Length: 372
Image 1 (cartoon, one colour):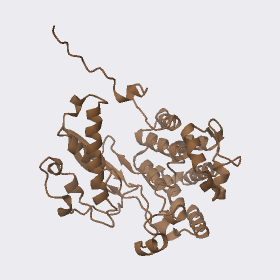
Image 2 (image 1 turned 45 degrees about the vertical axis):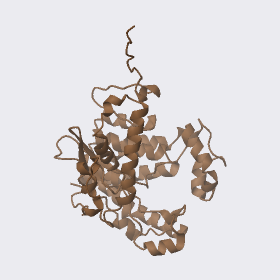
Image 3 (image 1 turned 180 degrees about the vertical axis):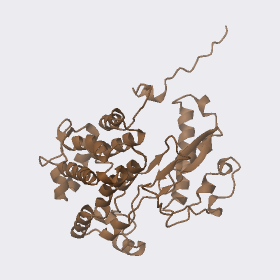
């Protein structure tokens, strides 16, 4: 009797999780919330490009995923559109207030960061979103903010958000202005109830009004005027005043000094395909580092979703993450040996000397052409 080989017909992970493949002809937007995805799609319908869509979807997530992200938070961005000689990154990460130093901070808080304003850095997401839009988008800030303004007027609470707010309910009560938004009936909202964020919507409308007031200066300069209001104008003064009242360290000078860095991304290849990522000021290099290690294995032959595939991928990612813990940091403060970490030979079975022996300074220059 001849044994008939059984073909591996296991479906891909995405299908196994109930997510069908999606095909598109002209554009596509993907996010972790359908309303943010829709916000991005609307930009294409208005004649916008991928950057308009990305910024619109990203800011919409700042409204929808308030337990994970915020317009005053962070936004690392990588952009590569037709006509650009190479991709660029916009760091979108804030800085510690200038008045703080590590020794003093540790003397006050130990080796951890307490909850509240004591852990606050300058808000960089707004700087990154508006810089990307001015440099690479087509639409006005008002058009890009329109979906988020609508979402601030109210959207139905979904299960993950309801669970997160309920889990953080006691912490939210410590901040009356936050409790007024996220505990509107004196409790965490239930799934399906409408969450309204009037103050955030008012900020977006305010930025759109500033843009309109400067529209004769040209699209990019009008967006820059809105950005400058956050970091140099009335909004900056309001942020600094709140920080003084709440015991935070961020000052008007800190906000004025905030500037996103525009740099070349880190780069590797995976089986002939170029792979780019944000720099070691983020977790971006984890992807090319992991791929450098996986390149030596026949990943495609392991079977999608197979135990061996998941094992190889997980262990490769763990090794890359170990180097992240050992070497990544703010390139303005530490030498990050990123070239050594991305060398192919470093990830081969034989290996080469540890990248700590090949320190390479990552440029920390401020771009003078951010609004070009």
